[in-house]
Amino acid sequence: MKAIPGLIAFDMDGTLLDGRVIYAIGQRFGFRSEIEKITKSSRVPYVRSQRIAKLLKGLAVSEFTETVNEIPLMMGAMQTVKQLKDKNYKVGIISDSYTIATEIVAYRLKMDFHVANMLEIKSGVFTGLLKMPLGWESIGCSCRQSVCKRYHLIRLAKRHGVDLSNTVAVGDSSADLCMIDRAGIGILFNSTEGDLSQNVKYVVRSKDLRLILNCLRDPIGE
Ligand SMILES: [Zn+2]
Image (cartoon, rainbow, N blue to C red; front, side, top):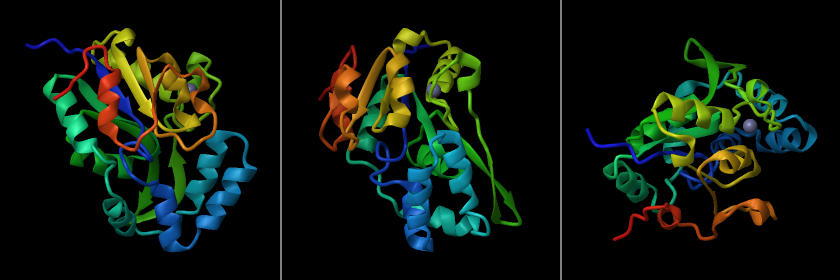
């Protein structure tokens, strides 16, 4: 058996996808401004996630998945994941979106794992209730997000027998900082949020996911 060189966790919205699922859904079904209002008014991240999930109440699952399927992958996503898989990396998604979306993206990219919030479904329709993986409460992370990306990075590394120093985390927003901070190699990718790069060692400023390969200890190049 080939040794596993490491585990790499990608954020989904704005990192693997060239777009954001909840905004695409809000745009299509007419509640984008409500999402923005909640984002501005709720200061506790997991409460924000719960309130946004309520907006999905009554929406058909099929309409949701149709919208997700229309969001293009980030430039270079397919090649990047393939090269990592060829090198025997464990590759997956840690997202504060929904499993119903991460499942589609993980399947498209043939990934090994995906973690996200679960939306409750009854008779093919969302109820507005959200089951959150959390995790920050058990490791003392200050993020208070519906998905503590640091907690799940640590958990997945353990599960796959990978030392934390051999993990890589890639994301574009402040929600990713707790895993970027703790991973062996933490990469801020094409961030649109002001000064996030200040405390991050690896920063990719272009919208081409292949560039993250240059940050790995054993760069995968052509
Ligand atoms: Zn956290």
